[in-house]
Amino acid sequence: MSCSQCNCCTYGFQSAVESAILNSCGEPAATEQAEVISVNSQTGLWANKTESEQFNGPVPLCQYPINNDPCPEVINKVPNSLECHRDVLVKYLEPGQAPAPGPIIINQAQNILCPSGPPVVIRQVPCVPPTPEPLVVREVPPQIPCPPPEKVITVPGELLPPPPRKVVIERLPELPDKPQDVHIERWLPFKDVKRQVILNPKPADPVQCKPRNIIVNWQKRQCSQLITEVINLGVEITDPVAYAREHGCTLIKQCQMPSIAHQVKNEHGQLLAADDNTAYYMELEGDIEGLKLLDLNAEGLSHYAFYVNEPGPISIPPEIIATPSQTPVASGPATPAPASASASSSAPPQESLASEHAEE
Image (cartoon, rainbow, N blue to C red; front, side, top):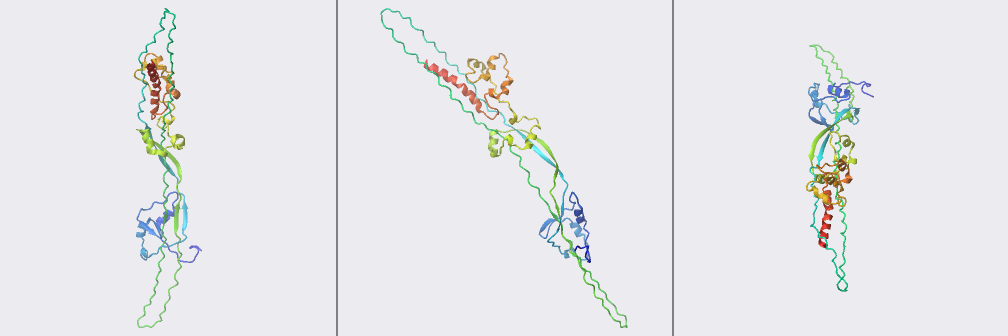
């Protein structure tokens, strides 16, 4: 039987803070941020401290017991959704200056004397001419192929998920019990008159209804709209080798990146290394005329043929830069090994000329 259905004496303090919290819809009611208190093993902020200090009852407030309700009334409320803002910080890492490629060294061997022609033999006596020494022709052994160098790929780190949100539970203290009223009726005797004294006993104590505690649980807020702001942190010169050593196993490939990384990659007009399909080309300088002394096709330098065929100022054809198969190095400025491959490709002519000169 509820309190409104029983014939009992009801008494309760009308708390404005309690009414504001119970009637709040969408957003929690604004309360004062007072001190932290602990009631019935529940700790929280004393939201109506001023209201309690201004309470003027028949007995002091400290004499009111705290209601201990094992089955409180739980009110679940749904808060309004929020507009969430997310900052996406984008930093572009520039690998810096590529290592200097190895030079193409062209060694010109000393001129070789031609062998003398056959002698003029005059037969004066019938004698057998001497047999000349046989001509030994030895071929230069083939060049040992150079293995491809190690290739290091640097992938940016993955964005970690945000930490879980904190849930705050607001639980109010129970209402105090009503103090007992005291009614005293006294008769004063008349002077010199005897009169019967009748004492009317006090009525039975009123029945008080024990209030129920209330727990207001606000559910988790929902994000109605996610606003993403992309912030450009600029370009920072970074060593790819040190970057890979520092981050180690946290590096991922482009295909493993989250969707937000693919959405913001073209925000600032920066061409990323993963999207650059052009090859790294090394322009020649120095004694370029020395290339005319070589067979570029035989030496694996056919992509430099335009240096020899075109007179006047040298201009690099666009198809040389756009075609990776025609360039001596792989794409990526952090791989210095292809330059040494170009230098090693010019080594066989030096060994060949030196061996022929030694045989002569």
